[in-house]
Image 1 (cartoon, rainbow, N blue to C red):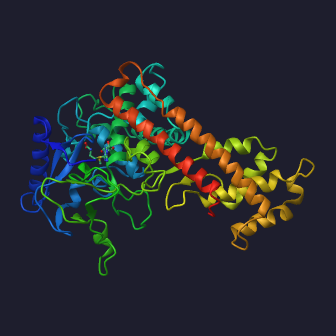
Image 2 (image 1 turned 135 degrees about the vertical axis):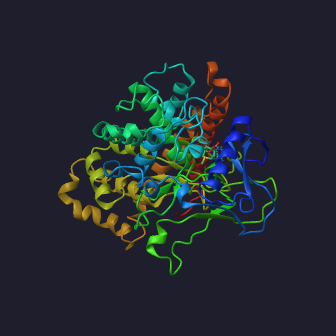
Image 3 (image 1 turned 60 degrees about the vertical axis):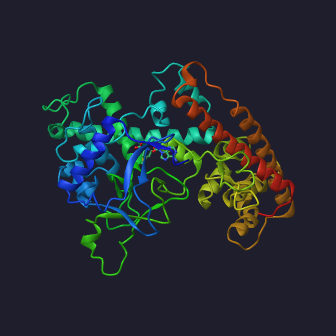
Length: 480
Ligand SMILES: C[S@@+](CC[C@H](N)C(=O)[O-])C[C@H]1O[C@@H](n2cnc3c(N)ncnc32)[C@H](O)[C@@H]1O
């Protein structure tokens, strides 16, 4: 990702100016001397935040007032108790749905309109959009071609995320039906004030727009007493123009746990962002969205870190791949399939089986080794022994490896699982080579399609590089 940028188009420039006036006039934010960033168009990542002057590390870049953010705290003054029963994602999405701007117009919401008007209007390049439209699109559509060409682990993650979307829609729709008064809050002319939201399908599309804004733009923000509560989320103007990098420049000031911070202040605080290193004027300033693997970035945010060829193989890029489908297939061919699954579930080792390029040597996760060890303990029994009749004895050595009493089940078992893993790596590498041959036909060569085609190729390349690197580690006799 580079620093190339261009000034905003006329409408976006006007909206950015309106946002700043709103922050200044409604929320008292100093947008002249205490705002060291501005929004510009980037070459390949939509809009981004850029430094308006050079600053040393720890300089305050801007502070967003608590009341200008959209979260369950600020919405509690607007929503009824019934709406407030929903999760943060559902409430914020509902709020955006009620105030979605029409086509290229501004949002008419009197409270957050100038902010909502700056949100992206179009999520057609987002994988959840392709997935939700899969039943109505034809198989030659580029989106269908893209869906078909995803690695299995990415498709599974996309299915999970889309299921979350549908669940959230079900809950929000139920709430809207039970409390038709919600509609009277809407600033949209197409939402009937008597409580009807017009065409059902277009409302689902609008909800998807709202939900994707929430899922691609919210940041962690403590609004509940418990640190790990999933409702600790907020939409935060200005900051939400920051693009992602593994080496970020923008970091939030974590003042929450400072001694003397009163519990009540914790829940109504402004958010201050500082720069973590020297920055120069005009430089794009990035945020780190969390330590996500590429498949998560791709499915949740619609982009990924496109690393240089071979960087995954030699561990310069921290690549990792998920092998749920391959492992499930392996177990499904065992006579003891359900028994293996039960044991792994009971011990907390079912799923989340992965291979990693770094730290070197490239290696399987401990969870994967543990699952493969059990598979071979059971496969070595021979047909006459039902595992449940002798499970304690059979499993003792395996459980000893989990509890740290021994480092392996036996020499034989080590050799067997390593061989199986080598086979798996070869299979994954071969299918990745195929996957990399993706070529979209039809309209798939224009606009964001060719960028997305390259992203899908990169997902497969990650599988190829990591599987090949782990195979090399195995052949070299590396201990994991
Ligand atoms: C919080 S927003 C950032 C601002 C956004 N670019 C915009 O135009 O409003 C997150 C979205 O920005 C895009 N994005 C963020 N980081 C990116 C990156 N490194 N490369 C490509 N796109 C990125 C993705 O579309 C992501 O869903």
